[in-house]
Length: 229
Image (cartoon, rainbow, N blue to C red; front, side, top):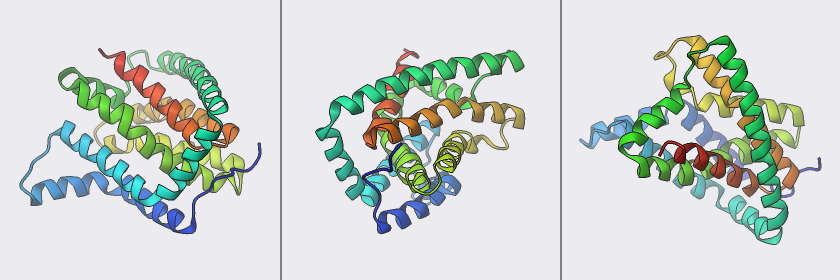
């Protein structure tokens, strides 16, 4: 596969690495602290909405030049982008099915804690969860994990780009549950996100357009969320 045509500016790269560290390590704690200082206590749903909203706003502010150039790519070649996104979704669902079989063979009663948490919130607040999961999360997560992390590594060492960006993508979905669940459960939760991480990265590299994994991520999340209705 060829190198990526649209890449981050130096300022976007520096700002992105700083924000990625903030998101992975302290963003939820900062939001909780802000709610206490402002006297506006937040429940889990509100915290999630703020988390996704801050992520999206930060993404637009830091990476606006990269996103605009990538949007031009999408407009210039929509057929290739959409066909790659569809292929990526099909491959993802197939790999996800295989991983699910493996996990349930090892632990028949396994339940992904992040998925269970989202499902529980969706029971009482479906549309806010749908909004955040389908429309807010994909762009912000893809910008950080594909546009920044995968894109930067892919230009230097392609295999490393796939491995580390996928590992970081898996980690962000389980890191908030450390200390709340046993390590074997969290490890299996981590594994469930590997197909998505790999397929989203592949779609980006194959299409040479950042919005391909964004579209893929949106479709995958939409199918998962609306299956809860």
